[in-house]
Length: 418
Image 1 (spheres, rainbow, N blue to C red):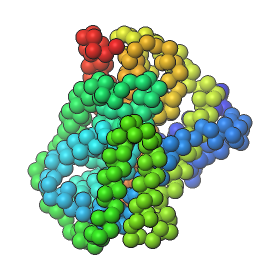
Image 2: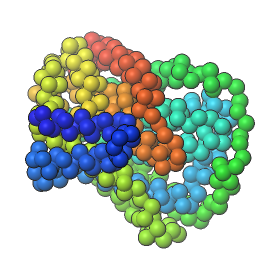
Image 3: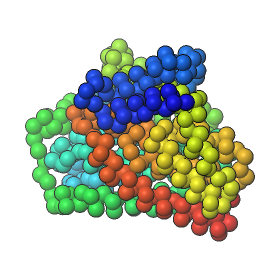
């Protein structure tokens, strides 16, 4: 247990601080090193390490990366960014539109997919508006988690909860939409509190590298093939529970279809997939699996009250917020599901969906969407510091968790949530 805890702590430090001055390591290397140590030092066998990897998440990311590469090569993001800047012609409007659009889309698509698609657009829009992209990217990540709270298809942990609990899509949506709406408002208020002074007034668009990007060639003929595939994938995500096709499968089909039917050479599409990001997540799953196997996280489980009342709602939220910072919200949900299967009704399931998702906003490593935004931004030359994210994330998390507990308690007291 001690060994697994040390490996988890070391991996966490490498991920949290991006680059440690005395060690040649970054986020992907930290996750990979931690995974190798879990196996090499006997915390996990090789077979157990393979089983610890969440292939659903990796398949989803791979499928969407294929689709994103095709769309990027055809000028889709260039076109979208230019339209985006025209509508959001001031920093305040830009931030508000990023938050609202990201939150709404994340409710009906997997939020990891939303940030994967939107992050390059947001960076381009910020550069044209001469706005520091870091606060806007933080807003995007936080909004994606908040918006995804509302539905079963919003994020992987909600999918796990929806399938296991048997809660219908409509009931899940009715329970948690008020939480998502209230939390979006709180996010906008927190962003204005931290960054409002720097966003006042209009900023003129700037020419240069970004301006040249905006005039890049758009392959309209290719987009007529790939955009319908994107829209079909979105529709498939929303209807996956009804048509009986899993979301990772939909993503893979969409990615391969875009690759085959676009006018882009397939080998070039495959080369441009972010394999390092996939390796990073694979390593992270193994590290978390080792910590779970060794019982490092048992201390949190012992503090969960499995009772469908106010104490249970508060307990699940509290444990979710703390544990999400160590293992991220998807593995946390996997860890808690067996425990909650003993509880009657929907109350604790919904509390877990809300607590685990909103709790992931506290730190950069609390949710997959946060890490995706950070990694994609880094490849675009933008560094999101752990401390900068933490400053905003802690305030937003505290406010939204309190709002979530209050709203779910009112629903429970009214007899609506049972």
